[in-house]
Picture 1 (tube, one colour):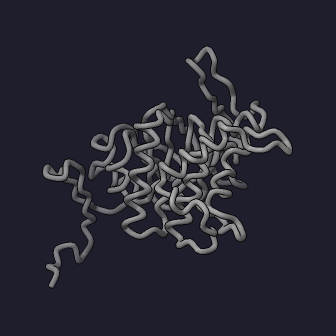
Picture 2 (cartoon, one colour):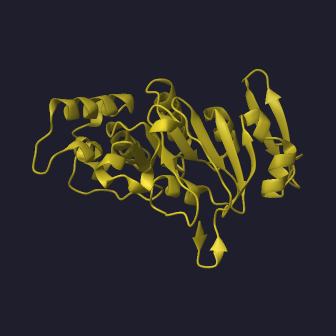
Picture 3 (cartoon, one colour):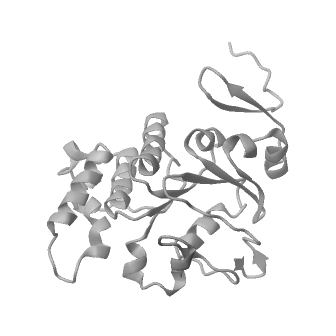
Length: 262
């Protein structure tokens, strides 16, 4: 994948599997979002292929050859920039996720309504379904768009920095929903995250990128080592396992890291 004369991604291979969360991590400009958008068919690679497997390699199909409606029934993307729709209720925005299944000028089927209701329930929006989206906070609107992705009922969900600009509560709820997509719905989730602690807590597999190439890939324990993080971010860190919390802890060794809070 190239932009003008610069290669944004070079010699990168990623596999998203049902029931697992794969997080793309790395510094700014490493190619994370470009790779995710390529999987969503928003960028066309200069070389290589992206395939969707249905029941094994023998049924693999190139995503570039799929009709738009068929592709939208298989893959959905939660993008960084989402408009704040005016004059629409929460339910009406969530219903956008059913457009790939609707015939022209046709109303919603019982299946459509069921998918919308389930998406509202899963994201905790049922009691807000009739509220105008213009009245919502940024975190609440983020959940509405996530619900629209869920209502689309695809086997692959791609999320580009879904916790960006959210406070602690909504970050936590979003990460929980990402895990629910994999654990409860069997979805193959690909997500771009900046926060390494978030990535370690939510992902089954990590892909660490730097300058459009893979530095390391594997489980959080395999990828989030002091050596790998320094190779990608050029900063020293301390990586420990918090036995009580049962997760990795990553502490940058800044000049003021040893300062005692007062």
